[in-house]
Image 1 (cartoon, helix red, strand yellow):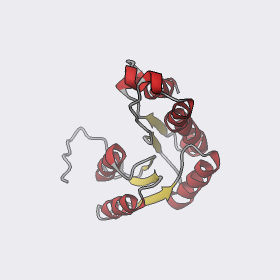
Image 2 (cartoon, rainbow, N blue to C red):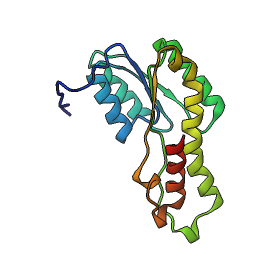
Image 3 (cartoon, one colour):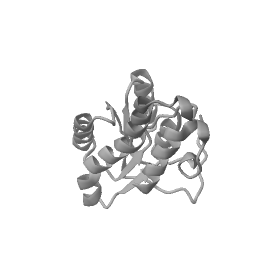
Image 4 (cartoon, one colour):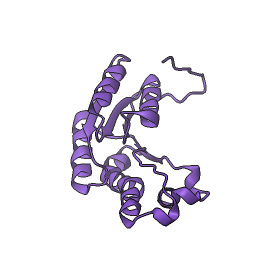
Length: 173
């Protein structure tokens, strides 16, 4: 896929970006765009190992460094270990993109506590854990955190109460 570039596009040369949940969909596109602007990319995946390997290869063909690490962002120990691996491999983190999230349609009256808890674990707890684990590196490099929200975090959708509430929490984070 060809990437359009403009003179107004940010130059990310020399930056290391960590993107959670980047093996597919939105995270993958963020990774490819950032690499096309000169960034080295570290990213997490949970179950999409083949997609992660393919993305790392694609970024490598752009003469950028890529590092994929399996990580369940809802697990504090895994997050700490994954961030430490990224810091060792890439030398630090300049930008964190909290992208990993879940989405599910469930009528409110059928929504279970387990579904509610899973949604908050991935969409609110995960970004909190990853952000906290990256703070030292980000502060050292005067880095930034980007949380990917949703219109669902601003406007409630009856069949997505748990998703909307979790994205509203992320907006406040």
